[in-house]
Image (cartoon, rainbow, N blue to C red; front, side):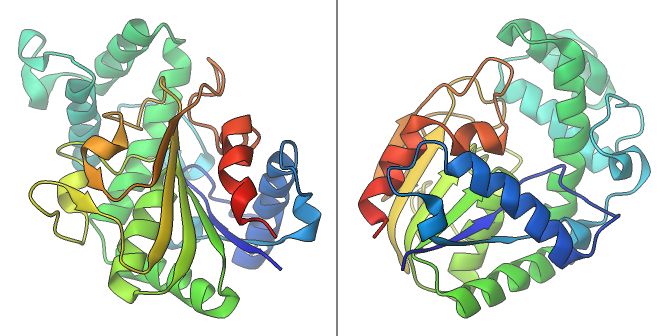
Amino acid sequence: MTRILAIHGVNQYDPARTPDAAAARLGAVWHKALNRELPVPVDAVDMRLVYYADLLRPTGPAAQGATDDLDHLSPEAADAARRWGEAHGLDLNKAQGRVLTPVRWVADAVAQRKGLDSKLVRRFVGSFFPELVAYLHSPARQTVQRRLADAIAKESPTVLIAHSLGSVVAYDTLWQHAHKVDVLLTIGSPLAMPDIVFPRLQHTPRSGKGVRPHTVGHWINIADPGDLVAIPQPLTKHFDDVDSNLSSGIGAFSFHQAASYLKCSATAKALAPFLG
């Protein structure tokens, strides 16, 4: 039987449930979304989800879920958000410089460039960057990796599906712990994000490029052309040995949602050859 292990992205903190209960709830959502297009019913596949949001423990506005309050971001999260704006082509020197430009202005400027609702983008920035920074810049990074590594060792999955920040966790973990996975499917991945994620990966890039973990048989990446954190595209410009890099629109207002990636036809086609 094919075994699928999944790892989520940001904004999944569920303080009302135990980690196991939160994993089961979110896993059911992923299960339903993935089942929509698969040629083989996912009911015939053993699918589990690794939950780690409790280990990052958001505080302040982020603890209540997505928020458009960008005035209380930590200095590290605010700096990451400004660098992200620059990666989208904003010239912060024409504003107030990287240090002084308000993050709200950055979010609104990116929203205008992409034709998106500014409040939607503010909420996205307010949830994504605090959790990204909490992973990249705290001791919790090793604890999060250990939870995924233990799950891979226990489940021996055929496929590892990693969304958003989860793809960074997966990449780090597969290099640090060398567990074998036949297929790594990254969706909405920020692995190539310059100045923020890429230079802080725990495996040293080769000649300026990242490398597929040696224990991964196949690496498939799917990115919506409008995904605000799956930048720059294509991922293959920044990582060697990506077997398939697919560009697939998942909806103008769903540019980064895991469920939208999971239920798109590109995901079903990518997984079909590996489902027994």
